[in-house]
Amino acid sequence: MEQYLSRRESGFRSWGDEDFVMRRIYTTMNMFNSYHANLRPDEAGRHTGAIFNLEFNADGNVLVAATERKCVLVFDAITQKEIVKVPDAHTDSVNCIKFFDERLFATGSDDFTVALWDLRNMREKLRVLHGHSNWVKNIEYSSKDKLLVSSGFDGSIFTWDIASHTEQGLISQRVFHASGLMRCRISPTGDKLVLCTSGGYIMIIHHLDLTTLHKDLSGFRPGIYRLMQLGDQYIPQAAKYDHVFSRRQKKNRVELVTDFPEQNDAEMIMALQIHPHCRCMLTRNVSCDEQSEWTCIHDINEEVPTSESEQEDEVKLKRRHPSSTSSRAASTSETPPATLEGSEVTSARPTRRVTRGLHLFRYNPTSGRGGSAAVARYLNDRPESFIPDIWAAEVTVQERATRQNRAREANNQAAAAAAVSQRQPTTGTDCPPSTEEATAERNSSTSSTSSGSSTSISTNGTTVRVEIGTRRLVPFVATTAPELKTNGHSILVNAKKLLYYASETNTKPGFIKEPGFSADGRIICSPYGNGVRLLGYSADCCDYPSYKTFDEVKQSPRQLVELAHITEHQDVVLCAKFSPREPLLVTGCNSGEVTWYRPNL
Figure 1 (cartoon, rainbow, N blue to C red):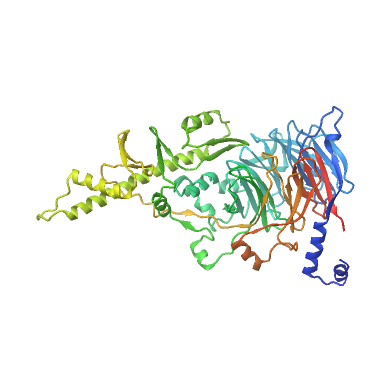
Figure 2 (figure 1 turned 30 degrees about the vertical axis):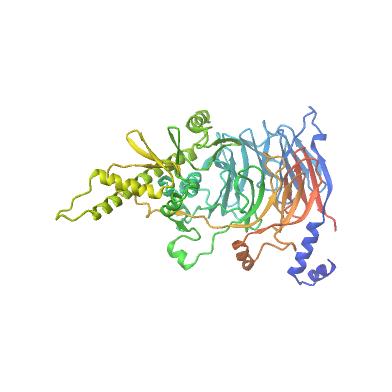
């Protein structure tokens, strides 16, 4: 340490020494103070409940905590003393806090509102913003556009012009909607908007312009587009928005991120943070089996274009043809296109989840539960703001699969008829084969490709054959139908963006745990059970990888390295936050305790 300080005094700087010093600082973090909010009830005897969110102001001298039971706590970050306690800041749980200058901040709540506050007068709110129809879970501020941005479980993203004052309130606009929206973040430079969802994907909007976002992405539904990618089924309603992924989209260009660790079948991406220098993004997700949680770091920047990709106008967004993948799927019995249960034809895709807020509805069309009746009941009970994007897309996929099967069978019949005609003896005239011969040839050709027996069922005037061995449903078409030209269509494949990952404990499932970056971006503070882990990119606590190492990491994602594990709470930790000015760490837990940590050098 003395050697490092002497070199700095002399004007020399060594990266190796800096890594050593930073590792020493972060690995010696220890608790030095704590605040038990529930041990200090207000005059009415009310407790604050769990600590849901922590936020420093830009100077790092004020910390604000959002609590479960409607309360907002304000601390002096230097003395760790409580300055102000607002017992009824909202009429429901306070979820998030965002400073947009040294003294003004906003809070979002389960009461569907956003409130504006001034640290100089916490006795009353400056404004209350109404617009959301479900819990408000995230607030951001764009210094570039001077707009406050809020998002909630209604899937809507609103912008608010806090400088405008009209009789009706602030000027606001709903700029985007995404089903299953969990969090949205704006990069420190203000040129990117990142969304994470309960559908297992992350959406990045590059070259962000909030003033034209509504117009540029009007009608685009990322959930339907992702469903088209998952099912390898071309959906015209989704594919017509391919242009939003193109580099010709000068503003608000979209990119989907869907790669996760091999053991992590990510579904609910519940937390999201962006690197202080906008180098990457940090997420925490729950796997599909709801038994594990993962922390992942993905690259947030656009790929460097090459000459070939510039000509094709698509960079790292490879295309695959659904015809090739569907033909491979049809040749195996692992993923049959459809099944027949009783008298009802249903899709055989895996169980999908329709998310409304935190209330999850499972629909498995291949099981005895659920089915169309259950979906109908769910759609009838949905709120007015709910938009059944996923269900509409699934119906579209089913209809398109049926048309493809019909066209494929028609082509097979035409080929069989041509083969029979070639084997007929020549009599001077070309005579088509008889109906009986064509039927025999068709039956023989289909029986050679099926491992089991078959039966025929007539429904609504259409005859279908069920191949018992493979549980495939193949429609018969009486006449030759025109070929369905799917070869001309292609589906975008998302670029690989995963860099680092770490498996987390699944203590208290159902609670959102908020990780964060240190001020220099070297360290990730991640809630882990009743404590917090400090994770680094390497054991020597190096800075974010250089471009040379970056390419290696991108080809083979690495595990984050645990540098410290601190357990000081009596209940599960829900949020962790570093000061923007110094190596000061604060955590909040489910029992209402706020704990402060600093290096013990």
